[in-house]
Structure formats: structure tokens, C-alpha cells
Image (cartoon, rainbow, N blue to C red; front, side, top):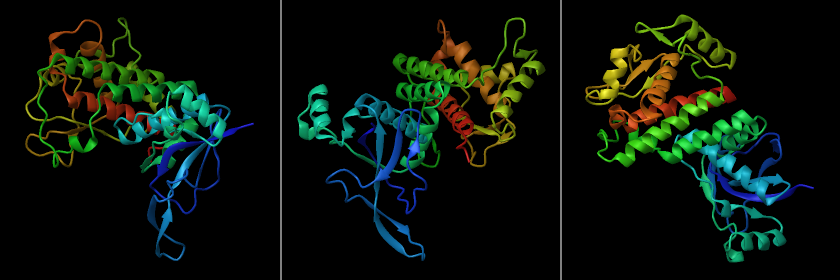
Length: 332
């Protein structure tokens, strides 16, 4: 028999109709209902059927599964899905799980060495919880999606920056870090992000005998193979990708331009002065992240690793985010 657990995630995107519930995962289901005791004061305003503004109680995601261990695994999936949607780290707080059963609450308090009143004391009232739950359910049915999502979260754990910090109208240019600990984190975040691409089966499949690039141009056989796999997965290869380029070109950018791998199609609409963000082809973006991983971040570091910036990591992050969300069917 399935047990019930409050997740600690309250959906700030209040819905008058959550559609058909519960949402089913492989070993669990999720539905939205009245929040846990003492947390029913979280409200938002929506339009009723007659178009009037009304204040309604926000609902909490409730997990149905066989054990507290499974409930925590679902919580971690939801948190990883929120990381994916927001492109910044959301860490699962295991103590936000609150069993419906008083007996399980006592056992959980013992497990986490907490006072019983502290079990389930954490809540997170945030937007996009419903979509995150739907993603968690879909991901649970396929191991490659499961792995990809958790690797994406790991990349953000190693390094992530709030998206607004990348908006040139809100933030200044971030110079290259003088601290080796930073470029080591940047490198391993890029490795984690490219590993997501591999989990999805969208990596560049080249070899010494069949390189991806010949004389500064794509090997047409390798490029055609990649495009075919992208299209098979429902990914729109015609939709360009925004590649962040800021201030004076770094040694890495010069290296990518000289090799012919960085090929801007046009400037992004917001590009001005030192903001040189450009639209590039999706296959070229995958090639660039592959190069950042293979030639700069992996194996023994070369001098180029010192030119890794938050923008290189963010480019890898946003590319992987798009590929994973689009493959899961939630991009639009």
C-alpha cells in the first residue's frame, strides 16, 4: 500500500484546475492538495471563471510511494527538475519531507537525529513546482533521463550563477578569476554538463580516423549524423542558440575562432558594445561545448584552462538545459 508524504514544495503558480491527478511516475505518484499543518496561509491571486481576481490557497505537492527512501528520491528528482527549469541550483532538503504517518515521523526524527517537531519543518513556496513534478514523473521512467537530470544538477552544484547575473542590463562584466580553485570548478562543471549530452545520445561521434573537423570545416558525415539524431529526438536544429561573448575575447575564444569552430550567424538582439552575444547553429554549440570539455577541461590542464570564465560554464549549462528540456518535450 502506498504511503503519503508532504514534499515541502508549495506551488506559487496557483491553479484553479490541476488537471487529471495524480501525476504518475515509475515508482510513485504526485498530486497537489492542502499544505501541511500551519502552512495553509500561503496564497496567491488568480482569475476565476468569470475573470475576477480571487485569492486562493496555494497547494503542496504530495508524494505517494512505498517508503520514506523513495519519497526522498522523488524529492531529489523534483529539486533537480527545478534546477533544470531555473538554470541555477535547487538542492533537496531531505528534512522537508513530512510523512502523513506519525509513526514514520518518529522514525524519521531518529534517522536524521532531529527533534520530532523539526521533521518537515522546511518548506519552499516557489513557482514552477507543477512543471517540475511533471518532469520528475517523466524522467523516472527512463534511466538515461534520470542520469541526465542528476548530472545536470551536479554541474550546477559545481558552479551556477543566477540567470539575472548574466543579463548585461543588470550586471557588470565578470572578469577572469585569478583563483585556480575557480577554474578547476568551471572545468569540472563543463565536464558534468557535457556528460548530460552523452547520456542523451547527442554527443559528437568522431574518432581519430573520422574527425569532426577537417581543415577548419565540419566533417559532413559527422555533422549529418549529429543532425539526424537531434531531429529524431524532436529537437529543432533550425532554432539558433545564443552564445554569450563578453568584453575582450579571451584566449579560449581566440582559439575557437582561429580553429573555425566558433561561427556566429548573427548578433543577438541585445548585443551592444562590449556585449557581443551571438546566435550560432545548435550543432556548432554542441561542437564548442565538446571542445571546451575535451581540449580544455579534461585530462591534464593546458594553459588555456586559466581562460575559462563564468560565461563558458553558462554557455554549456544553457545548451544542455535546452537539449534536455526539448528532448523531454517541455521546451515549448
